[in-house]
Image (cartoon, rainbow, N blue to C red):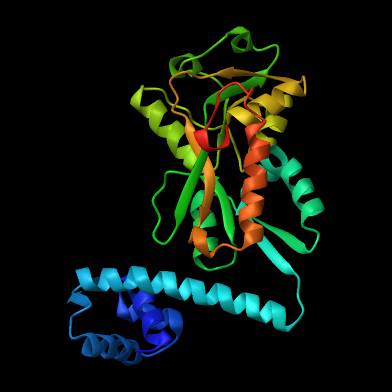
Length: 309
């Protein structure tokens, strides 16, 4: 049994097809099958069931895959740290998240972390969706993700730190801005500015509106909530944004945010492969960020988890 055998096992479980995995790795299908055959011969048990659509791991295959993934991940992290030590490189902490997350959730945490850990380089990889953050984490291109939590993903773990209610963002002279709260039915006929498809917020809003017979067809589509605020200020329509963004936008004095009571809250938090494999710097960044987010306890519509209150 070799490390390469285990890497192929994990990849085959995720690919679900030996032929597609061979194409992805630019190898022959027979060479891929040899790795699996060697593992099965050594263990004396079948690890995959073959069928017309590809392969499916057996119960034994799933067990070995889960433990192999954890071990391979630990080895990869260890090799990265040894290489950094060998070449005299500074530690680098890479975080993947939405394009405006740093501004709304992490700006004070970044300043604190840099003062307390000047030897650690911080790197942020923007991603347009939680799904994309998961892909980046799975490829070992980032240590942490700050995402919308609650979406199951293979090989990814989460820690939810807060839930945010959703608000209608509109101009101060809009009739809806004078309401203390809104329901989705109140949004019929608005000039809706909508998030691009593929995001958790987009899906949650679309699903809840459809259940209540409300059609929200976007006249203008945006990729991040800061752009939504700009479009609202320009008088292009109204947008739906989460609590912390709504609070910060309303403080600018140019727009009004009104809670939408029958839209479900959206959970946010950290995503990572294995908590105990994170570097001390990564865990410290999480702790500092959680402390700073805990200071937002007065933001309407933001419910902090017990861990950071």
